[in-house]
Amino acid sequence: MHDNKFKVLLLGDVYGQAGCRALFFNLKSLIKKKKADLVIINGENAADGLGINSKTMEQLMQSGGDVITTGNHVWQKPEGVQLLKETPHLLRPANYPDFPESAPGSGVFIIEKSGVKAAVINLEGRESMSNLDCPFRSVTEIIKKIKKDKSVNIIIIDFHAESAMEKEALALFLDGQVSLLVGTHTHVQTADEKILPKGTGYITDVGMTGPEDSVIGSEKNTALEKFLTQMPLKMEIAETPLMINGVFAEIDTETGKTISIERIYERV
Image 1 (spheres, helix red, strand yellow):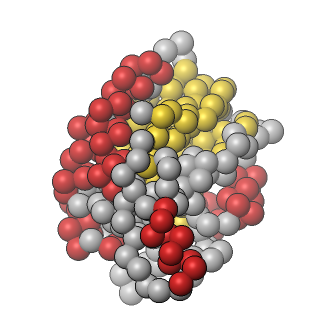
Image 2 (cartoon, one colour):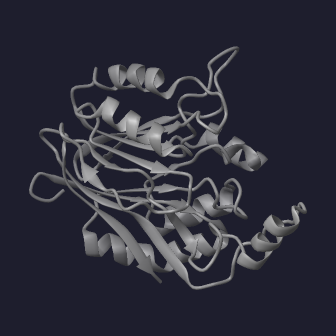
Image 3 (cartoon, rainbow, N blue to C red):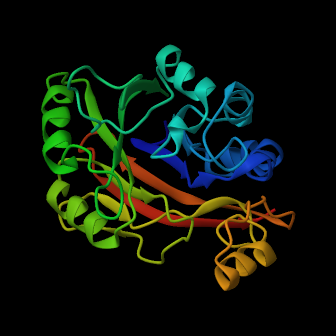
């Protein structure tokens, strides 16, 4: 920790081996440059562009990740489902229904880094996605439980959602209750990073880590042909120069409020 500032690097959806490679060769230098205390990576597309497995999980952790968040594609690989059961710092969205029993894994992880405890929450949106439990109601109960531990003053949310409206609404709903709320899922970085009136850092979507010259990570000619012909073509990961997308935020350890937030867009 540096001068009562807890520095968080949160990176957008890692897409396939291309995205894993971008982080493996470049993340540690980015961590050093930013003096990041905590690194959160969305890894739901790390394994072949759909899901996560033990190989990609290990690559993300070896690259410098502390917590791996996911989203709706985390269930695509059976190995990923098993990893959720065994790995506390691999999260799935917390608002999956608990009836008749809870989904494998957890959507919340409390980590201590640089002498500071931070809670990381993974949520999934409902607009144009699955009809999960209400993220607004779910997160309200989660925050109540977290705040029973007075030593946890920093709360960070990865909201994996399609709708910009839903993301903005949740951020305003939670303004002042959480330190940082970032959107993931669309693979397209937005230019609206800001600190909300009550101190919550926010961006609608942090973007994607993977092939830059692509259609959200996929080979662009195949994507074009799929749209033009409506044939069920298999999308392949593009082999182009790579990029790292994310945000870097500084959070006051006493108030839990964001002091600064900036977009990360690095061509590597």
